[in-house]
Length: 361
Image (cartoon, rainbow, N blue to C red):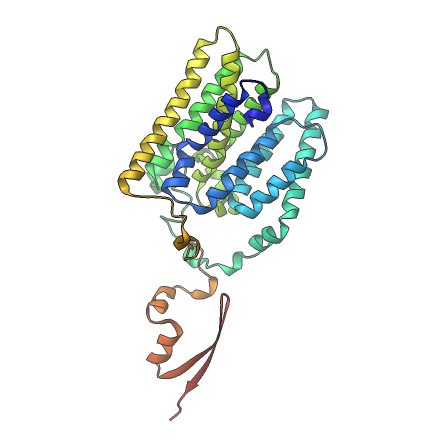
C-alpha cells in the first residue's frame, strides 16, 4: 500500500518499512511464531491487500482487485474476513461525514458493491460456514475460562476484576504498539493538516481503521458484545488486534513519509522512529521468549495431516462424555463390554455404519 500510494523514488524505502512494520508487529508475530495459528499465516497477507485497496479513494462503481481480495480472504479465513469487513465498513461510513456527500456516497457504494460481489464469489464456502452452526456442540462451547469472551478484552480494567484475564502480554503489552501508532500518526496528520493530499488521506483512513479495531477489542464495547450474540462467534475480542495491527503498521510508514518530506518536523520524525523502535523491541523480546521456550511454527506435514481441531469445535452429536467413549475404544469397545459382535461396514468422515450381532438367550 505504501508503494502504490507514494509512487516516487523514495517509495521503495518506505515500502520496506511498511512491510517490516506489519510483520514486526508483536501481535502478528505472536500469531505467526508463538501461537502457531495456521489460518493467520494465509489470511494476514490477503487482509493487508483488502485493507490497502479499501483505503484508497476510488471514484468508480467497482474494483475487480477488491472483489478478488475479498473472495480470497473469505475462502482463506472467514474470521479475519469478518473482522476486516466490519472495521472497514465502519470506517467507510465515518468517511462519508468528512467527504463531500456525493463523493463519499459514490466511494461507499463502490466499496459495498465490490465487497458483496467478492462474498458472492465465495458463497459456496460462506453459506456452508453460516449454516453449519447446528453441527457443533453447544454444550462443549460453554466454558467460563477458555471460551469466554468476557475475559478477553484489551486493556481490561473493569472486566479483569470481574471475569479475570486470559493473556496479560496479549491484552496489555501488544496493544501498546497500534495505540502508539494511532497517537503518532494523528500528531503527524494534525501538524500537516494543510496539505491533505493522497498520502495524508490514506494515512488518516488507516489511522481511523486502527482506532476502530482497537475499540472493537476493548471493554468499551462490552454492551455491544452482550447484546449482539453473533459477535460472540468471534469468541475473543482481542482478535480485533489483527485489524488494528495491520492498519497501524501501514499508517506508520506513510505518516513517516509525510513527516520526513516536511521541513522543520523534527519532533514528528523522532516520534515515527521511536514507534518503529518500540515495535521492533517488543518483536525481538517476543522472539527471545519463543526461542527460550522452544516454541516454533508447527507448519510441517504432522500438523497439516493431523488433527488440527480445537476446543469448542466438537460435533453436536458426540454428547458430553465423548472423550470417555473414545478412551474406552469407541464402538468396538462398547460392543466388547456388552458382549456384542460389531463389524464396521462404512467408515467415512461424517458417516459410520456397523453390523451388530447380539446373541440372545
